[in-house]
Image (cartoon, helix red, strand yellow):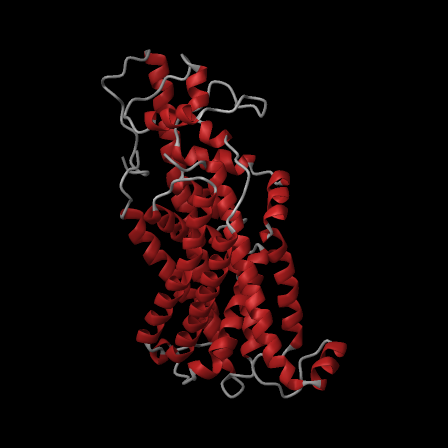
Length: 411
């Protein structure tokens, strides 16, 4: 049954009428909640697009000057740049002892990107957990993997921006320190020569990098209040409600009980938890399970390298977008700086907690790219806005296609 299909009553159910009605009501409420979720995602995407198009209209930008082939290439490069992070999330899940399907993990990760356009960004966690949770993958492990992958992606991006900006800034020598002392950009500077951006990148690298240390991450997870997220993720994927809440003092569930409980969820029969509270506990064992976080050092290193490649692809996406507005730019000459620009803009937008990083990304683009568009200042405003529209449309297209291309059921 599709996650959005309305619930069907079971003609062969042997449960009492009252329990059956209660179960149907819960299923209908779950279905309504899923529709509300889709509506929330649509609202977030619409708000982002409306704001972007309003800005373009205020700048009196003409769409006639856009080369759509370059824009399409930019969107493709952006999506390809997301795949290494999705692969790393899959690897983390495997390190946590989970058994996700590769396609199911990649699909959940890419669809989950739409959650960042909703205020609070918690919907990213809910979407990915709801889509990956099932036989072989617990909600707790999925949430841990989401947070660790996110922090790692942001840490790699900000560190990459640090290294690139530092390389270009060191060419300015004495002017660099004078600029830092007065907290001003270097006079008559070229692209990427604002030392304030380097300090911002260093700060972001520290803030996002420290939680990627496994010992620190284990401590942070222990302190974070993720119980509410697990409850929301559970409600997205299961219409059952336990007869009594699972307490932290409950004994561990055996692996056989957990597998048995999950397999029962694949049937069309609506369980009657009022008859068996213990069955309710077993059905929700994967939510209660909370294995320690651990990751193999080799997998972590490969993950960092892969995510760095993903950031380079996103820098190439920015380059293609600039080409798409009619400005010829050498990828060999500006590719690294554009990568630093894209990475720092996205990480700063993430840290702001503003939906989609709206406004924050644009400020970073303006600060880094201003010297590049000195003769055509309009493009310094247009390119970040056009890039936002391009990336959002690419995410919508891919998420829409993946939503209907569901993975085969796992048993």
